[in-house]
Length: 308
Image 1 (tube, helix red, strand yellow):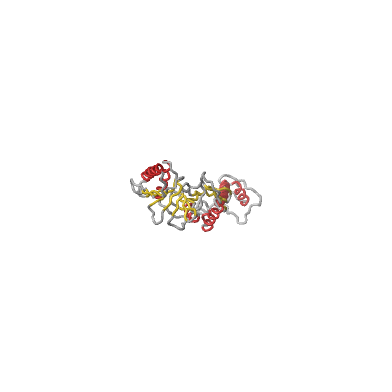
Image 2 (spheres, helix red, strand yellow):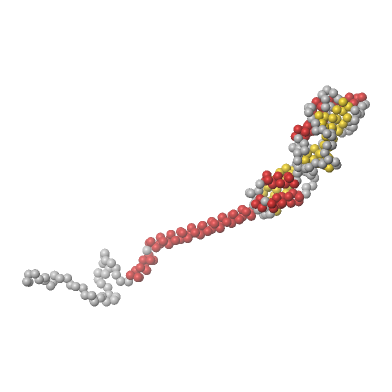
């Protein structure tokens, strides 16, 4: 039986359950290589939190995110401030008016134009922003109330909240008198009653009309061109036209009065101006040489002159 019995020296010693190492004691193999440290784990964890490289990267990442948030907030604030400044800098609260033209000789009452523009802006609130204003629509609005105005355009800011507007006004090529009421006509035939330039040399008297609505075309370009050529060619021939009269019940004839000459001249817009003025000059020479002073001479028929 002794052959199958284990020797007592071969059996490992069993660890006792109640065998506890005294507190504070350190085993000699406690800090050997490849051994797990045991003991005050809470203190070790605290040291790891301060010296761990991963914790440094986390703090850098946190600061980067925080910096991005601050930059985003600042950019948003700047964007809002820039937007507000853009609106304020382009807002029209007051109106300053200038009239273009070096030949203006009459005083200009700017208040009537300022009020008209303000009325337009009151009815179109968004147009108070310069980049929203439709200058063409504004020009139509102002010209509809002030026929002497051709166009209105912005000219930037005079001061904060006050915008400069430049008005282009019509230049008369002829005066148009109806029943002692003075009107003017520009090169496009548009009539108006407020003139800031010198009085035109030609005064057109319409014997067909009793009144004249302003702001509409009362004469064609052909008719005004005809009057202009009559005045120009007559001046080159030594005659100054003072009046151009549209006779009653006709729109194809024109009667002109000459300076220092009592004889009126009847012309036709259907016949070339140069030929009629040449015939007129010959007739006037004939009258002067024969001491004749007729009331009128009719040059409407080529090669003939009828006078009375």
